[in-house]
Image (cartoon, rainbow, N blue to C red):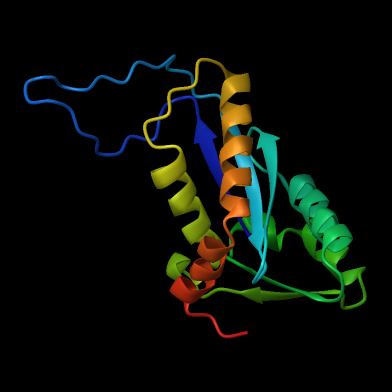
Length: 167
């Protein structure tokens, strides 16, 4: 499980253009942000889009969403950012009587988190140079592109392979 974000300022990647015609990205220049909580199983991608930065209440809400949609016990693998180690999140997890087990990644090891590969694929291949006209357009395109990625089972499996985690 991990979080990522997008703003109305485009994520700029290399592109091509005819010789002498420099490509120009025109954008609204707004730093309004959406955050996305994401989790993957070996067969599926789950996500939640939020306005603004993710807070501990959002993490708890997303964990509840996962519990409703994934049967049995869950092993959550995540980094050590403060929001994941907050008192409210820990109290929620402890109240579940072992339904969720937490495994923390080593510090500074994003390459071990399979969800990081989701974010890379999402931003680099599905949203490169995307210039939303409005905040609503940003949210709609984020949702559309994540659903598109979710339908592709092979990439989801490849994120686990790239992270080299054994379960």
